[in-house]
Length: 318
Image (cartoon, rainbow, N blue to C red; front, side, top):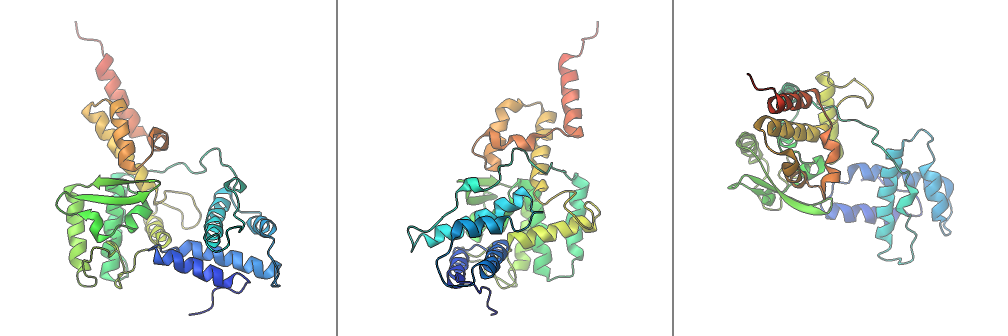
């Protein structure tokens, strides 16, 4: 394998990535981040003397003036993990504080929720991918899972075989954002899963620790590659421009689930104030504050609310 690192930190960076991989994390995008930091160290600290960590980190984070605040936050988060890893054998090792990240006061992106027909187009397009049958069926069931359960992309790709209760039709999401939860799924998703599992048996045994969504060699999908694959389908379908960050994102499938659930509750006339905590638990949030971002008004929701208001306060005939 080609040597990935060249700086004074090369062996430590290799050990850090190996540690993350042994935990079952793909850590694909993060490996590029630490390689970027390694190149910066080679350029600005070519010797073997002690590192000036604060100067190196601040210089690396500000190396590209065009970086957006979200990018800097992701860069620093990965480097903090590396510095915390070094604390295992160097207790006094430097760790940058979280406050080094730029503080965002509002979201840069607003969700662009796909309609049911648009999601159906994405699912159909997976059948025409020039890829292994397992890859095609895996991407298909991934999109179905994201849209019909509201799971995060990282939660879905890290599911293991033992995390599926095939009798109760439930996923068990291991600790994610500080908590674990059970996520039930509908019969139509069960049918998709059954078709995928039939294809999966040709490549991977149903071992409890094996990843549910995996490549032919049993390795899990990387979150970054799965996200890129869904974005490509969105671009091919014309939902996103061919280039740039405009248009819907894979995470917006989670917004789509929340919107559909709200619409169903509106149509059935339930008390939304009582049911919102249920949605919060289902999405894996600590409290309702984390769920608020998924409650943005859409034309369909506004029409449903208007009809409900009219039915409630309409003047009775004389």
